[in-house]
Length: 405
Image 1 (cartoon, helix red, strand yellow):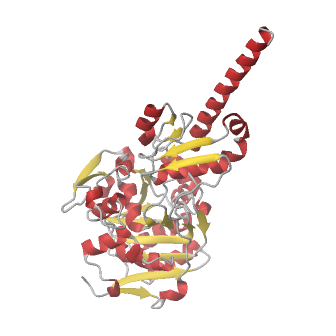
Image 2 (cartoon, helix red, strand yellow):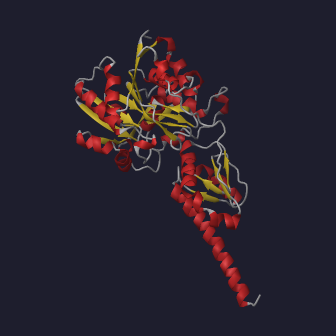
Image 3 (cartoon, one colour):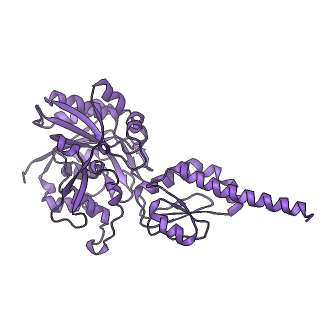
């Protein structure tokens, strides 16, 4: 491997010009006459200010940069988590506006048939279904948000490529259970991402830390205004340096370490621009080692859940906890369960997501179907259970009144 892997870092208040500054420190990619595909993070219907989606001005700068390098075409594409409507997500995060102004197509990766990529030497995933656009474009750029992640420690350029998996293939990564394949500190999801990166590796990475996310990423954390942009032709090297800039040791991030070992990356071969990136470190709050829910009257059982359902659950509690008093007056406690191995604590337990379906059937609990469901669907189930008890109590009072009790 080359002894000089360049990673450029820029800091500034303006995401557009900071992105151009980071890119201009690199040798221009040879994309003249090529079709360039930008893969930002548009996996949720949230504004960029929440730190969940790539800043539209970072995307705008990338479009302008690759056009200045002679690209024949530049397009933007995404396949978000289940339940997210792609056109609406593009509009909410602001990318639709910058793409329309530049006459750049916005692609829905799930709109075309998939192709299968086989993975040699895989540990847990020996083939993946990938959007057909992976072959249609010559040069793919991963453009994630700089985030912490409740299951993989960080979510950067390599993990962002999960958004090129076709439809529910992404969900499958969270359903793998092969404990014999894991070593200490590794999860099946880490192994799956590393397997994926051996065949679905981008040509370049532009990591958006203008507004990142810390804590309970990738969707329920807090915005982190780091003002950073990291760019590099080697996506793993860019992830490695970005992780350090977040104040996290990349050796402790399992999917990065596994990919480093697989690709033979030597961290000492990475050359940062500027040469002293330590002064740019902006520590991100880590996800908690044990996920907890501190909402009075709410008890959550969580085991082997995915980040999608967990984020939905956090969003539900944030939006609706103040409206739970009538339910709590009736039942005393709102019991929620999330994750394929979650167990009920009472027959009144409400299960979140399809993975809990078998458990819900066994214990006569209530299932909120979806992969993931929405926070609104959980609220509907809560109201249904509340209304059912209310009707029963009203009917009982009416019967007693009629009988003169």
